[in-house]
Image (cartoon, rainbow, N blue to C red; front, side, top):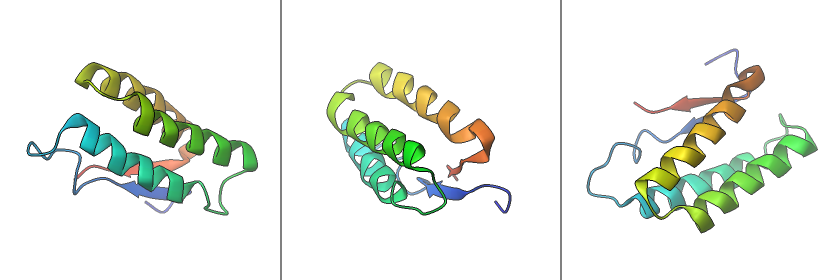
Length: 88
């Protein structure tokens, strides 16, 4: 999306029923870590992306924990059109 700083493409993993919540969280964590190096983001935003990455990797083990963290990340991404999240 042209008005957003960048895109997080999770369309290949987000709705896969053959992957566990933990497997999805690890893929998302890896992609967030890559995004954290994007020059479009401030140092503070980079730090927040790194924290989200670590949280997805270290704390997600249930659907409930995934959903809670995803909601928090979604709000971060949506604020000021930081990150377009491609789900499909």
